[in-house]
Length: 379
Image 1 (cartoon, one colour):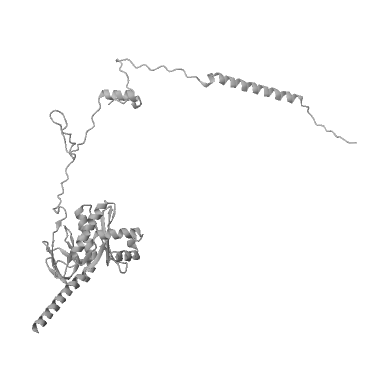
Image 2 (image 1 turned 90 degrees about the vertical axis):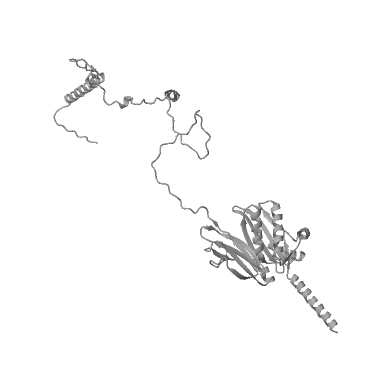
């Protein structure tokens, strides 16, 4: 009787243990990863980053990822039926249809686009039941493969945070160590002050860590804390350039121009690009100036020579004692009354005056003196 009771209790315990394990496994959510959308970069980049996302989601421990071959095969069928397209993710109805076809509860969609400042890596999650967006995140990276993988892991962890907190309930510990005690600690954007090296009891989830100190480059990382886990992070800060004081050179008088060095044979030695010397203008030879004057037809003034328009006074010639300089003979100037036209005008004026006087006297002799009257009557 006792043996039968013991066997029954053992069977019940085994059943409960198996049920607990099955229940624990049932907490994992089946998720699907859509093909990565790539813009401005090779298609191979999208495939490589898609594998990084799959590994990261599996390491988080709360997801069951649909294999890539299964996802590709079912999406191909949906394309033929004109259900799935590049803009399907923007339509809630299409998201629900695709999610049910893949038998997943959550859909991950990632895009990689090349921009002026680098490569933008963004990821969004969608709830299949409602067809709505749950969480989105983006990170800027360089074109190097290591930096692209880093950005991909960070965005995958960020969008997974609410599901991890909900499905894997429990507490863990987080500790960020730094050699600079004056550094400030930021967790998920909140300032915790100078508390590096302290152990925090936190809920399971994803934590965005930043350590900042003036004069140093900021430290940045995104980590996952699972229930019962103690996560240790070592933050290494690097100086921003050279922090030594800048020495100001004293002001010195202007130095003469430096001639370009030459070796013994008169050849110019090979110099580095920064060795630039100022060339002096070489004086032109007399032959060169004569050729230039002949070509242009212009004659330059000789140094010290006085041109005709520059002469102000003319020096007198030297004469022996007792002799005077002969004055130049001046030509007789012609007066106006010695010209022919003057006498012609004068003759015309005199003749006209004589004729007018004669005519006046003739008219005066014909005039009769006395008074008279006349009357005319019309009959």
